Image 1 (tube, rainbow, N blue to C red):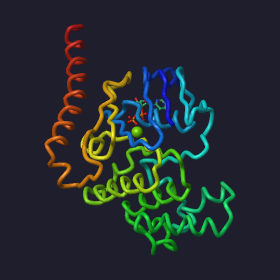
Image 2: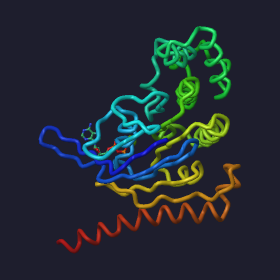
Image 3: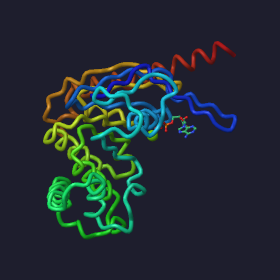
Image 4: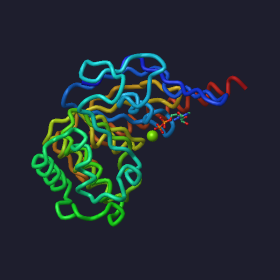
Length: 264
Ligand code: ADP
Ligand code: MG
């Protein structure tokens, strides 16, 4: 469903060149849940923007459902990190969720039904008439997730969606995302800098290096499909995986440091 082949992206502007992505190859099958983990600034958002057709690659190819991406692909939804900015403050919660369905020209009764069931799925059945700014950060991010679900995407991209919420809310939202994935069978690519979150959520973890960014490893997560915030995180298999991912990221940082030392 997602096919990224030798993707490179260099930002060029005002005499400043940033090689954000050096060489990324990655595939996600239909219905898979894959997490991408890497340090801040390594190009995770850049990768999602290329997949979402918001940014042109410098070289390489990006395909969604077998079609080369040249603009926002059909049936693809993105949940951004800055939920505060992604909701329209002058629209009520239900109207925010309905917005993409209007753009898709879905008939009114169907819009009503999709909005109601999406809000119920994220535990906000009663909040439809509120304005986003009347809700907590965690609830606003639920609205953003409801808007993505109501759209019934075949591909959902999530860019560090829980980076700005408190720990308890974050745990609840992680479990919400897993249950949405299990209920809908959507293809999910979830980007985070949090190693534990990546291992907890995904069926695979794609580990990125620091920039210029490459794929260090594509690691299968062999944990049982039913995840539990306390039991899974205490499972020796979970601890082994998170330690492995941490060591991978760390060993690259160390090698780079050693090389810098040698050059001095
Ligand atoms: P991440 O999401 O992993 O934190 P980003 O994709 O946001 O990383 O950024 C990767 C690198 O590209 C960073 O060094 C960042 O400063 C740079 N960058 C991101 N967007 C732009 C832009 N529009 N112009 C120039 N540089 C950018
Ligand atoms: Mg980012």
